[in-house]
Length: 105
Image 1 (cartoon, rainbow, N blue to C red):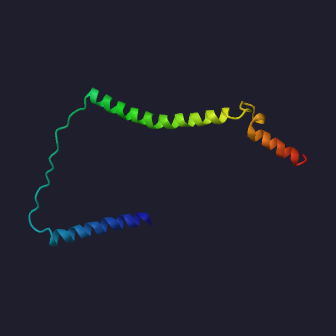
Image 2 (cartoon, rainbow, N blue to C red):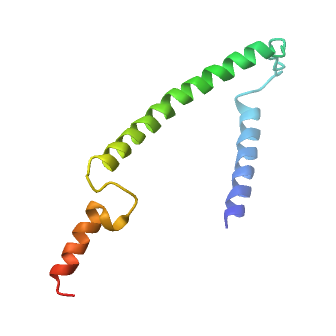
Image 3 (cartoon, helix red, strand yellow):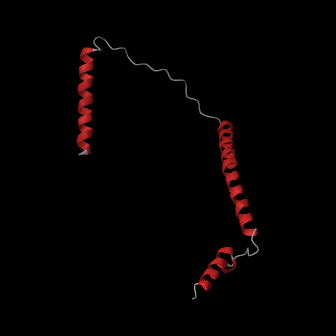
């Protein structure tokens, strides 16, 4: 179904182009000339400077976020007296253990 719509679009474009060529665009057509500047190979210094600016911008944006998240995690880890690697001694572990004891199990 989609290929039919695609082919139909091509045929309609060709028909409209033929109609416009015979009605609105009669006469000699002027050649299309586009002037392009001369191509210059970038210098190594220019490439390195551009790359350094992009890397510096990325590190500034990403580094700020990474540093902020690291500080927040450090504070959350050290603000509670139960901070450590044992999950049973964490705030969530103690509250779950207390709720488990209250449920009578």
